[in-house]
Image (cartoon, rainbow, N blue to C red; front, top):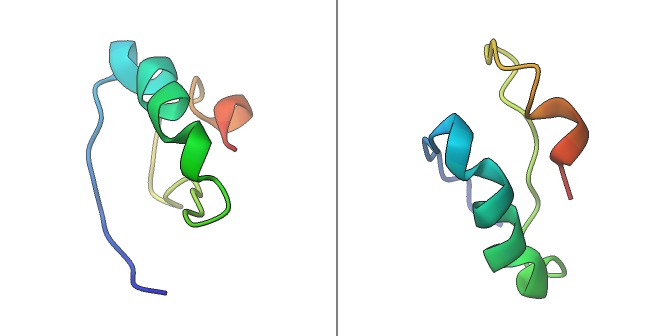
Amino acid sequence: MQTLTIKVQDNFIQDFLTIIEHYKDKVHIAQDKFSASEKFKNKLI
């Protein structure tokens, strides 16, 4: 696997996760340890 850093606007997180849900067997998403957004924590695939 390769690591890629992306920035997603808070109001687009849910849409982004919905788009990539189809690929969840190929993509692992984890919250950045430096992220301050609490909204993101419970929405990880």
